[in-house]
Length: 338
Image 1 (tube, helix red, strand yellow):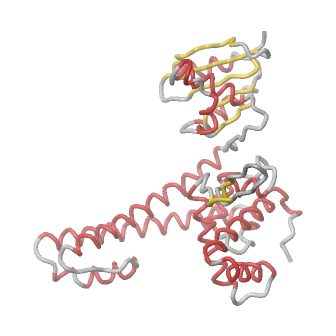
Image 2 (tube, rainbow, N blue to C red; image 1 turned 90 degrees about the vertical axis):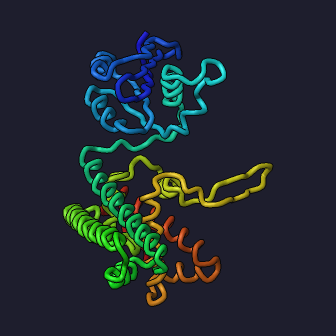
Image 3 (cartoon, helix red, strand yellow; image 1 turned 120 degrees about the vertical axis):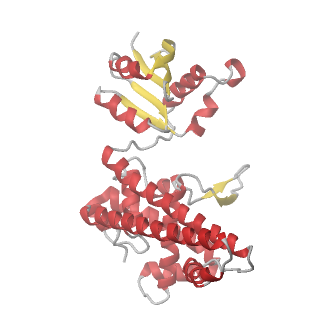
């Protein structure tokens, strides 16, 4: 019988492959496939559905397998765990591959959009820039912590830390002068690197018409627009805008039972970077909404008065996500809200 579904447990050097036929019976069980032999094995199979967990290298393998006529489905690891027969066979690579194969067959399973080479290269710009931002924050906190040992307590504001640390640099005793000086030099270097990557992102936004259309929405700038395009492309993997907002973790969790609807906290699922960009954009939008009279600004202002500042921020971020999905999925036919 022909193999219809294949599950692959990805790794660095040794992979586990599990294939089943139309009756669900295993036809291909290879718990140890060398990295150099994996593509050759998959290429020898007839076109089938291949399931993998969305992890490091998954998009690379997905593109290779699709080039050989296969249909590839990437899934979040947490969605695969319920299908692992841990009570019978334990946790191993072969059991993981079988669980992935089973999960890939479920009609209601949610799959991860497969990224192109261009999307991954653009997303790498965002990841590296965010890494530099985190390093800069760590350096600023290190400066504050070291200066507090000498009785110099600085506020959290980054620009104030820079100016006051430089002003008291000559008064520091011994080696502390050298240490703080080096940290301030590192801070300057990180500022230059972040500014350079900001220019890279601005260039990407200028060269993409879809990014320009996204930036028409209030609360979405160059960074958010290019990051969203790198993550979801045209957004065709989502049925509607609410599903996209739920994928980003901008909707409340549900604990409903017995006919009663109970909504909990915001789930915060999905990519934290994309969600934080939308939340920061929502804060900027709400701060500017006081002086605007369009429908979205009036709605945001009224919502903040009725439900509070932070609930309004999350609601605005979710609304921006839904409108951004509409922009990407509809293209030129999208009309701005009145």
